[in-house]
Image (cartoon, rainbow over all chains, first blue to last red; front, side, top):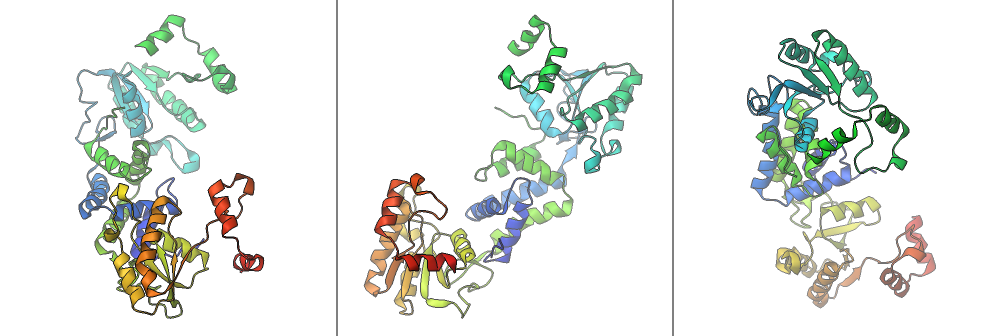
Length: 210
Length: 210
């Protein structure tokens, strides 16, 4: 459908919004017209919020998470366990794990996972800086919390080989049946893995009950 | 859930995106992180597109649709029938009707419909300017193309009373069973209306076949 826009300014704005993932032309038009109905100040705040973020965003010198300061709040929190590093793909995963309130160590944000199909090589990720952190000798355990996909597995294996020499404990977050899921509907690979990696009864409930 | 953001700049941007209709905090975060991965130039283009639209947007002096010029392309198109005015709620409806390629008259954009619940009174809409256009004597027919809702009906009736005195033909777009719908599943009100407002057989197909 070749939509006719009454104004090129409107068309430009709609096209920009439609570049966002999951936003089609119809939704983009709805969002732009919504903003157009707001006060000048509100639109200015919206528009500058993303420009300012892009211009002033900083990444923690230690874990490479997005941060407002040289070293992020998590890395500079002395009450957290600096001997425990959880390796994640991106800031979203840090936020998801922080929300569980189950982890008291530090993070290391890779900035993606190895994916030849998307042209992402190990050198594009913060793997060298992870090796450096581990080589300092302060780290006792590295937890790999990457996606349970082919790319995640590849990255896990790559990191495992890089860190093996340092003699740190390397673990992977548990993969198994999601809490709330019925066994009947779990896929076979997950179910098989959950049987192989079974947990002692009282240990398993300790974690959930908190 | 009280999400912890690693940066207030990030949090501000996410909160701004989450104010958009249909965009929750999770989607907002996904969109902001997507933009953060783009080039500086792309983010600047995105951010300025909406700011520029808001700053420079103009409304057609005649039909009040969004326009790049004093009078919009449709109103200034001499090949269109100026004696026929289609009254719509907003720019989205102009675009939808233009896409049908079935209408060759002009539009009048009200900027909303009468809705006491949302505090929208007739004086907030472009009704006085519609009356003025009709009073010029050039207009022969006014087509009301508002939503088939209580608010749309109220607005239709209000406009009808305002225009009655000028002796122009006032019509409402057909309401009936949508093309492609099965009669079995059509709601009773629509079906009843479609029987009352039935169309002579050959007239009905003329429009669809084109």
